[in-house]
Length: 129
Image: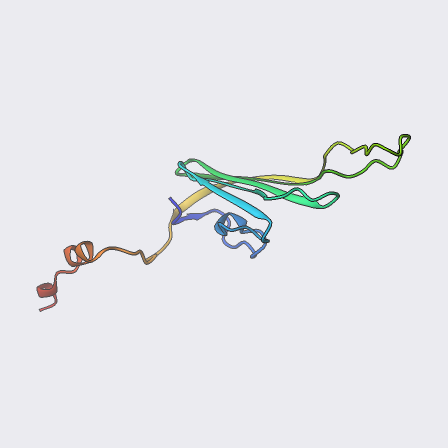
């Protein structure tokens, strides 16, 4: 997992958020779960600011699915009958998308980190002679 090549040949930097585990801004909280699940959401929901919520997961080794939504919450209502109370509007989704990608195969020659024991097993020193 994670080294697969998917049916989309190229995503621009903004669209390839599932490959950035820390998110797009300092207010992003991230969680990686077993099974290839990535969750990104705001640390703090700011009043009247569009916040981004994202989930990417691998239901199988051959499929990558992603959901992204932008939501505005904690926005004050304009019709304030009672001046001593604050009325908040319900959260509003201003954007949402769902994408599913099929795996095309493995990436060619992706380098990987191995410990010294594994390296020597793969490339014995006397094999070069």
